[in-house]
Image 1 (cartoon, one colour):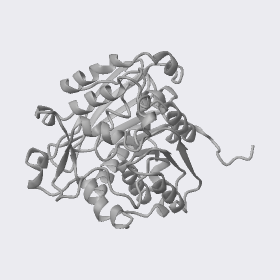
Image 2 (tube, rainbow, N blue to C red):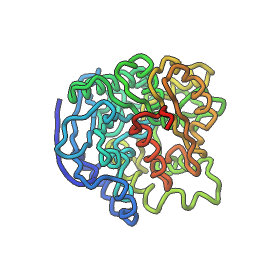
Image 3 (cartoon, rainbow, N blue to C red):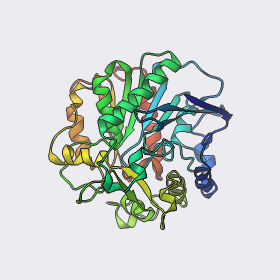
Length: 367
C-alpha cells in the first residue's frame, strides 16, 4: 500500500497526476464566496493523506483520499465517513472539489470527522482496467454493482484496521447509493450510519445515460452533454443562477483531466465503465430490485433535491418505505437543486443536513 501525507489549511490535498493539477488550476475561478463558507468549517488545519490498494485485477490500483484534523489519529466510529461516487464521475473531483474555497470533504473534516473518498477502478485517480485500453465494443460492461460493493468492502476493512474501530459511516451518491446499500445490507456489523444521496430504485422513467444500443465495456461523455444532463429538469428561469459562475468549468476541468486517454480526443471526452448501465437495464429498468433495503439495519438518511431528473423524487420516496428494519430513518428533500446539488448554490444546506444526521447523539430523545 502506497501513502502520502501533507498538512495544510482547507485544500484539495496531494494530487499525483500532472493533468489533474492543471485541471484544478481553475480553483482561482471561484473564490468570491470564501469568507461566507469559511465560517462553516473549523479553523484547525486539515491533514490530507492518500493511499492506493490493489484491486482484483493485477496492476489496477484503487485510489483513496483521507482528510482529518491535523495531528489527530484517534477517531470513534461515529466520526469516520467513507464516500463513494455515482455512475459517471469520480469522487475525487466532486466530494473534494474546493468550490468557493471549500469542499464537502473539507467541511466535514473541519467539524472533526475523519473523512475518506474512493474512486472505483475505471474512474478518477484509480487505475484503468484492461478493457479501457481497447475499443468499447470489444468487451462486455464491467464494474457491476457487486464489484463496486466488493471494492468498498476492501476500503472499509482498511479503514477499520487503520483506525482500530469496528464500524464506520458510509455515504453514496446516485449509483453509489446502490453500492453502499448493497454493501450495508450484507455487512450491517461494519456500518454505523448510512447516508444515501439521490437513492437509486426501481424506475418508471427512461435513463438519462446509456442510450438504447448495445452496451460495450464503457461509454464516453462530453463536457456539453455533462452540462445538459446536469440542468435537465430545471425550470428555464432558474437555470442561470443555479450553478455559481465558474463552478461548472472548475468541476469539468478537474474531472475530464482525470482521463488522460479521453483527454487526447478532439473534443476531449471522459470514459466511464458501463457496469452500472447493465445493472440498470437488468434490474431497475426491468422492475426488479438488485438488493433488499429491508436488510439494512442501521440508521439511514435519504437526501434528495427536487429537480433531480436522473433519479426522480418518487424513487427516493419508494425506497424510504423499503427501509423496514432501520432503527430510524429520515428523508430530506431540498428545494431548488438537481442530482448535483452538492455542487450548486444550495450545497451548504446539503452539507449541514448530512453533518447534522451524522453528528446527532440521540435523535430519538423526547426533549
